[in-house]
Length: 437
Image (cartoon, rainbow, N blue to C red):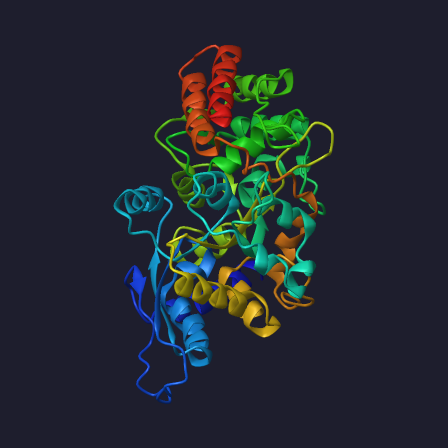
């Protein structure tokens, strides 16, 4: 039943996206719009670049969302470029260097606040946060959308909680299902170790992969390491990195010494989940609800039951990493375009019906209470259990981009047999040096 519901939702997204296969989408023609009178504002041309936030990366979905906006604001024309996480950052850096930045971008605080905002490239959106509707946004989300000086560089649209997943059919066949709490989708560190051992005894050579070929999907490996023995990645104030602790060293040592878990420098998160869906791994650390929806329709080899899981922890206190996505405005020094961009953000986030459509397109969760949004969706109901395990949103710590690079470099060093305390110490030194610059 779960697979059927996932497939139904995925098909709906696919059909919505089938209107155009290109990577960019221009607004529909205004030929049928009523001619503007001389009293109406002049036409403003905006560009929106969006990272793959669920269906927001699909041209057909974007066409539908933009069509409703253009009907209400025919003078604001928006063209869209859909980025990927593989090349999006380099494209953005090239635009920064060339002075060709978009007006709007849809992404998370780790880029909008900790990177571009810290480089003084973004518009402070405080006036949007002073609107009555902003009072309903969850406090934890509000905190993540501003920098230490109180400037808001993100106005949020949606959120999710990243998790891991296991091949339930294989776990049951290997006798490893006994180590999983099916009701809460949780397990202890000991349960995790025992499950890996059971799978190995059953003949599974590669149970899991600590992928470290780059930063893609690194939220999974960070959550795995910090949850195993209750470690932390940053301090609560998000001013420095705290990986160099006995707890995290113990976790990395466990992973490096456990048969069936391999540190693989040839994989990033997307590669790992593909191997999992092709039954080449028994579990995946890079997972969330949109991944299951996407894989359900795109992977012909997906013929087993996926069971989403929280990361194992030694004390029962699960801290999953969250994702927040919202709109930011690059400061192009053109007040008319900045105000038009704010109009677009208000349209997508203030009115409940338009906001619901925008969030549903993301296949994630709203950043404020919207009752019954997924009331009849069994798959989304299943994944909603992870919202209670949402941990600290530490991705806004200064030096974040450099810390991400140092993280996968450290994992590669450990996988190659390097001294773990030394590798962890070097990571923290590099990350905190970046945080202080």
